[in-house]
Length: 453
Image 1 (cartoon, rainbow, N blue to C red):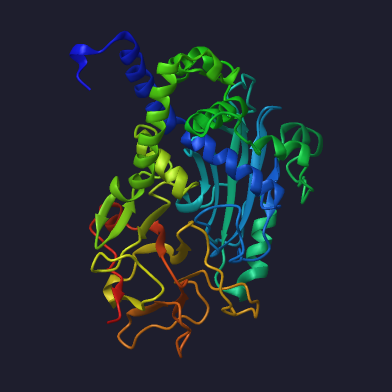
Image 2 (cartoon, rainbow, N blue to C red):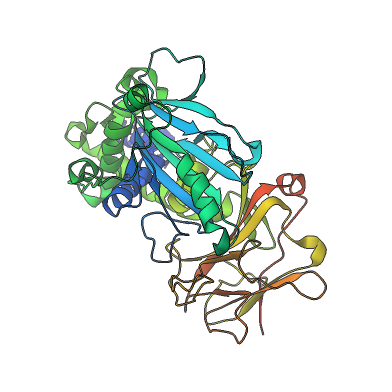
């Protein structure tokens, strides 16, 4: 549109388009986490202000979080900081296994990692929200979260099913509680498993009331009310700007205050932002051999488009020094991965994923969830094989020390190295836990996925 002949109304529409485009990218992680908290709590996949401990690897039927993994024994907590800080107790372990507690905010940013590639970091950690201004005990380490809710994930390495009792012992020793509970009962207290309150988690189940063209802004407004401090209405430059398009922490989205020109600009902006988000996951990252490498997961604050895309397709990603993610939707020829074909992923002996801890390849359907199948794992449970990697029971190496993975829908004769695929489109994510510098520096590249012709 030529700027020489714009009327005031047209200029106002363009201004609304500009602000709306930024708001759709900036607020997308808030919306995604609002939509994740509800199924997590309502289906018992997470608890509020205490860990929901999983006592087995997550099954293929898991449906409350996108891009899950099932190579660790996990615990998930929705940290609600409205009522005050939370305390995380990490005792010293005689078992020196890889363990990490990841603390993130609703913008999909990692605030702190306890353990992981940092080694053991026992201690008492105080997780505080944006409105906390109290004193912190000298023996506590403060973890500041800029939103009123935090996502806290505990992961403990499982070296095959025979290792499960030892892994569970470490998992259950790490606890989270409110500051009031800590002050009353001490660090040895563990609230344990609870029943989630529908009156609480239903507030995250939001149904927009406005027209579809503006529904995204109503989602953003509702998530702002849930997750942000009221102070952001005056102190956050983004939020202050968004007042011009009817968004605020205090009142959410107020479309009735907007003129028709502003509404037209917002509707256009939503469509454009959605296109950028949908394609950003594969176009704004480093690419080689048709694998997409994500080096800025957990800290993409300065790239709103990438952060919005990652929060949509791969929420909860950790920092590169902890985990590197390689994702592909294509084979070596650039064709979409599809279960009507058979594939192999071969690593030469000297080209195995250089991870100091372990590596794991996960299979996802187009919805970024596990693919359900009837593969029987080493424990005899028919929960489906969703991933395969260096800690998989019974995995077989080639005679020369390399490894060849079979990726296909049809069950092969030998299933030790088989990763079951769905009958249609799928994608793969290979995680390298504790990546070597060759990975972090971009020198190491995963081999392409080859279609069996």
